[in-house]
Amino acid sequence: MRTTNKVKVLKKAFIDTLPILVAFIILGIGFGVLMSDAGYPLFFVFLMSAFIYAGSMQFVAVSLLASKVTPLTALLMTFLVNARHIFYGLSLLERYKDTGKAKPYLIFGLTDETYSLVCSKPHATDDNRTAYYFTVTLLNHLYWIAGGIIGNVLGNVIPFNSKGIDFSMTALFMVIFLEQWKQTKNHTPALIGIAATVVSRIVFGPDHFLVIAMVIIAAGLLLLLQLRKENEDYA
Amino acid sequence: MPDTHDYILLGVIAAGTAATRFLPFLLFPAGRKKPRWLLRLSNVLPSAAIAMLVVYCLKGIYFTKPQGFLPELIALVVVSLLHLWKRQPLLSIGGGTICYMILVQQVF
Image (cartoon, rainbow over all chains, first blue to last red; front, side, top):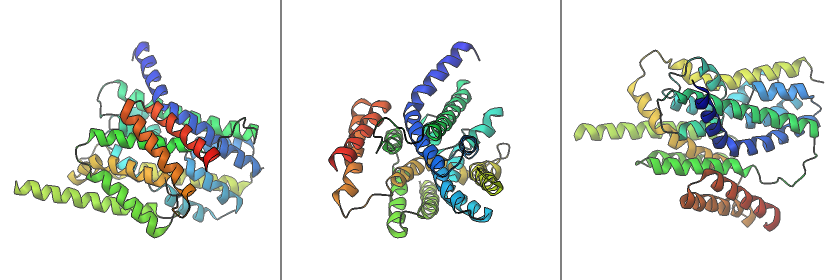
């Protein structure tokens, strides 16, 4: 790839990840502060952000570490909190198919935020595609590690009231939701996603509803596809 | 200082997280032909998954007090209106977040 292309990809990836930069630095600081309060040194925070690299799981991990749970409990908790990643992989099987050497890293770095950016782009097949996915994944990873380090070193010395800044993630997902709504003709899958998650949240409470929501969504979508296929058979 | 148990938990959580990310790619390797239902599913899944993420972010809201849901509701309306108007992600996300921060810090 030519250098001008590299610069172009980097620039595009940087602009697209700006909202994530802000949010990951702030959330990363939150994580770093928590870990410093719990008495963990900088390199342990670095190891967690670099190798676990999953925001909500790392916040859960702070309490798992503090209560010295067994490895099996930690593993089951990890599956429960991160089960939604399975959806991301399933929807990116085709998109990540020909990404070559970058593929293991792209999969390793598949956070909510990276997924939402990658799947909001049209399925392009040009040469820059893999470079763009890779750069987005790497930049987000670096933002997250940097946030954790800053938080751990500076502790609670944050110069302004950042309460509510985590809403930027909600806003990011909302924007991508709107974009997808505009790009697709059939809105039933999106409506199934909303309905299943809302109902699961109401019925099962805020802590363990997501896995149930995923099962309902998968079943609902497969049923929808089956119905559509039968209609095609009639037509 | 972290002890051995801490490092074991770190390793288990890192491996468990990676497993949830790699699982679909291991179940359906790139070289092999994928079943048709899976290809169809992977076309409609992103819309549903993003919708799920939006609701997931709002899991903490409650309706017994105005401050339990109004900041989120107002800020989401602001995000949507900004986005339908200018279609500039940074503007929609930045505007909505600033609005939310003012609401939770000053108003409610």
